[in-house]
Length: 368
Image 1 (cartoon, rainbow, N blue to C red):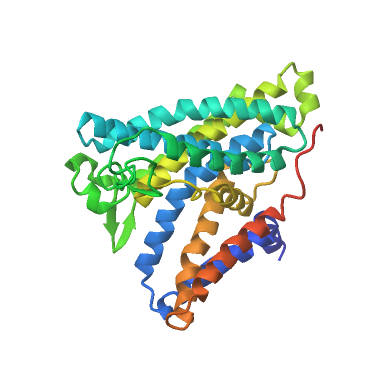
Image 2 (cartoon, one colour):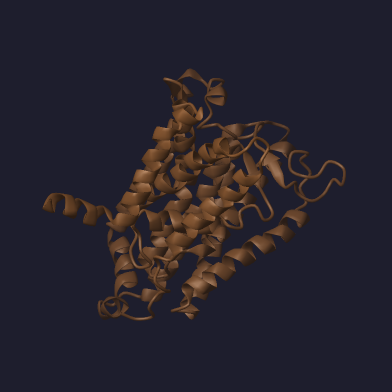
């Protein structure tokens, strides 16, 4: 009895209930006419899609800025990098998917680092109100990006509206670029034999191994950094500022470092997301992405003061797994032609986000 109680306390009732609900949805899926192979494929796909974006929460929390709703700054940097890489290929007249992916990262990472540095300076001026300010920053970044998408002097027909000849499309197809390059078996089949392990099928389940390994590699690098001298100093700054200052560590610098890493991970994450999804979504499409990332890491067991790699792995699986399995099941239960499934999708996704945010118990403390 005591072992069971210890097990429940270690996992936590919220995650245990959500996990059991996830398992229940998988069990009833075949009875609703859904193929388990499709369900597992979708769960793996969405877990890999959002993984790096959710990972972006860890450095922010550990450095003391809390849950980084301003990860949208990194998302915008990633989208700018991706569109710039596609435009560069267009002007050179050559389609090079791997080069597009590489240039997207090469442009996005420095841009995200600069934005993260400026963002960190701002957060250092509003200590105690980081969550509120970061929310405004996230919304403002998406609003400002709308101006960017209408102003960039790109000429590629894939990027701009064909009739007007200017202004970016709402959705950009990556079929001719890096879409599915590390996740779609149909795309990977056209690669050299030595790269075909990046995505394949096992018993009907699609395994996007390339993106999963990339996600796990990013988790491992983050784990190594948090155990380095600089990472320990950053975590100490987020845990106890007075103790950290007494050890001659500049708390403000550590907060900026965490903000920069978080923003860079947001940029890398949206590029990996688009690579799996097969499209870039501009304008207001990424508006609520920060909330989904925050909800996922909180469901995984993180708090506003502490987040771990395990919280990211578990939280992303539970959050995206429930969305992936619940919506098809509910759609089968709705009358044919009913629009209630879309309403319930919004209720479920926003309900999970609201539940997760209710566990934050306020914002950050200024000093401890």
